[in-house]
Length: 327
Image 1 (cartoon, helix red, strand yellow):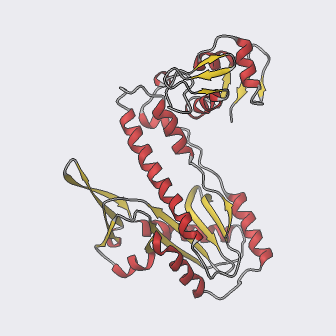
Image 2 (image 1 turned 30 degrees about the vertical axis):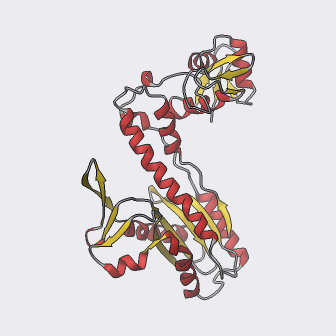
Image 3 (image 1 turned 90 degrees about the vertical axis):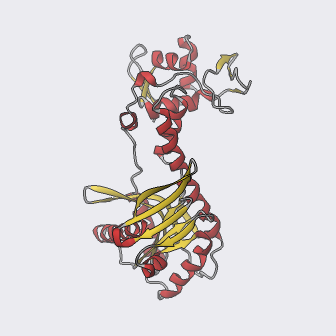
């Protein structure tokens, strides 16, 4: 198993994490931000958990490649795949779900129903059918392979349910659900069964590496640009200050070249770097000396320039109008 694209925290998670710590605790918009962040983090942890089961895969006598969170163009849009496994004889798409409670699959109506207990009462949440979703990804990937003139490989799909405490039930099309849905604990076995289904080496090593190269060059990470608009947050609501890398509280103070947290006394020379990331995620991809000083609570232009220059951040403009590029 060769991992060609590592899993990373999505920009959505990074933005929501920054927004969560930079909204006042009493801001009514923060509740939805925290709820959405928890959902994205749950999904990310579910995706992480399948790594253990992929490592259990045995009996594969050929190199195969793993791509996490790959996003490819399709016509005028994009499609994203949680995990893609590229074998010499076939491709496997994994759509990972980490839902809790009771999950009811209902492909007849293209839906998945989640039943959870909330405040002592059962609540039903309706989700898009993940089987339909993963089959759509398979069709889009096939079109993308054609458009990029790559050799044909059959494409298989699985929906992987990672929460071992979740009860799975079926409302319609049981055979379809059994074909495409698996718990993560059975993932290695299901992959081995698919591997044995296909003749060996449709692609030689040279052609396989070419497909790997085209997949990596075609990947276009999602860039989130409208999070504040989505939650109705204005720039004036974004709290300034250097946040503590230990307790996450805002308001670290610079003292003799080190940032110190008044809450937990944690000290760091580089805490401002993460604060600059927050600024770039939420406000602007460039920053001026005056904006930087206002955001981190430092007045000395000399100190501010030293902090920025120490990170080798590129810039444009003369000294007075200079703007530093954060991304």
